Amino acid sequence: APTTAAAQPGSRPSRADALLLAQALFLRCERVDVQRIAKDLGVGRTTLYRWIGDREQLLSAVIGDLTDLAWGLAERETGGAGIAGLLATVQRFAVLTSTHRPARHFARTEPGMALRVLLAPEGRIRSGMRARVARALAAHAEPGSYAPETPDLLVEIGIALVWTPITIGEEPDLERLARLLEALSPPDRAGGQTR
Image (tube, rainbow, N blue to C red; front, top):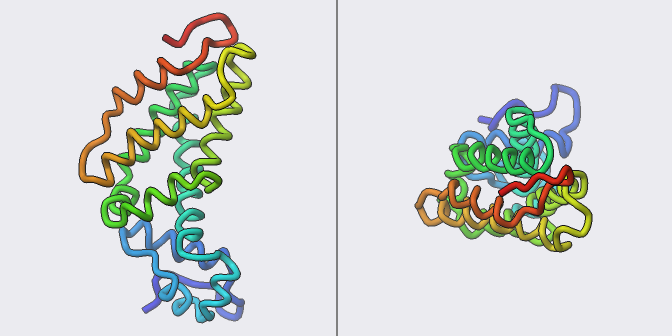
């Protein structure tokens, strides 16, 4: 039986169909298997590879889409402004993602792959988070009040303190994460300190 509804009858399967199938597998805590997706769509593995690349790239796309959704939800829920708003959003994002059952399942059953997808220097997850943090710092922090590496450092700390423990079967220390992020954040442009 197919994983989920594929392309509409009479239409040809597409990259979007492949991503939907992969996301459905991920959300059901099933292994995202390229061969299974190709079979369900009725396409060859070469076609699937042309659409999405290898399995790591596919997982990066699936998790990247879910990360975008989680970040948007965290921003809406916190609604804060300035550096304090950024820190509140990051903290809420950490809660949302670290308690997401499919993400935890993936990190615990495939820790090596999970860390590769999360930590790839130019990968979608890390580069997307770095860009979000960099934009917020540029908009709210005093110019020159932080090193150019600060966005990368904040993202690295967040990934390390949330996902490394999960991959080894422990719980992340989100309070420690909040303290470290606050300690490393520059002052708000308005003159207020985040710490």
